[in-house]
Amino acid sequence: MPIEQAQAQHTLRHEDTLLLLGSCFSDEVGARLEHLGHPASYNPLGTMFNPASIERTVDWIASGEPATSESVARCDRQGLYYCYDAGTGHSHEDEEACVAGLNQSLEEARATLSDCKALFLTLGSAWTYVLRSTGKIVANCHRQPHSQFERRLLEPAAVAEHVHGAVESARRVNPGLRVVLTVSPVRHWREGAVASSRSKAVLLTAVHQVCDAVPGASYFPSYEVVMDELRDYRWFADDMLHPSAAAVDYVTRRLLRSHFASADDHLRSEVSKIRAAANHRHARPHSTSARDFAQRQLAEANRIGSACPYVHLDDEIAWFRSMAA
Image (tube, rainbow, N blue to C red; front, side):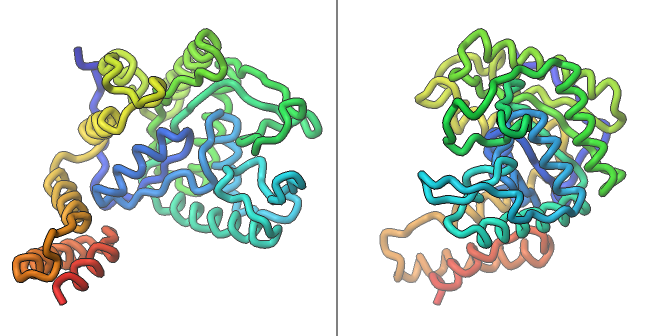
């Protein structure tokens, strides 16, 4: 039975810039929105599972505060510099390069935040890991010894405070920003079945408190859609924890239906077809039929690019040009 889902009061258009932050589910949905041509940016500092780290990420982006050598630490065992407020993708063998990469991502993210129409926050877990030496909640433990951290469960009031703080920081940069909150359907089995459910219950309680209190904030039921509507295990990946690609596609379609204008469905379809065509490999790539196909797709890609300059089809256009030559 389909989960009841309220229609957003103001729907988003295809050209609206989007910023998605939070758990790996933000990456999955963000990549699909980007594939459909939406100007979407997701997790510029890496995945953030707990609400405290999501708030810290938004604060850091909004403040314009740069990363410095004090923002990073070195792991002698791995020979890497890393940042406890960022994911492993920002680790580097060179300290200056590590800091420079963080600052580039922060600068790009702040430009996106200033310009975007909607901020999507996906909460993954209420369990946090506190670095004992500083008393600070980390976004990523970077494979450091477990003895360096203390595991704590946030209470609903603390989660709501962190989410509310993230929204306030974002709106200082972008006052008209719409906010969509959701809870990741990915269960954190490493915490244990009961602990994972307890965590999700805390998150669900808190996000509804925020939506009730903050104007312009809405809830999207990705957790409920996967858990109750797609409850069959055929909708899950091999680990039986993460939603399958088909399930994420389904959730993304539900999100589009509730928060985006249906008038843009045709444009989304056109962009998707162009990208699928660019991935198609002909058995006879130098044949007349293959060149004719590439020329038709090149003309269509150029048409979309001219009409919608925010849709980045540079790679597809370059491929079709090389095929049509």
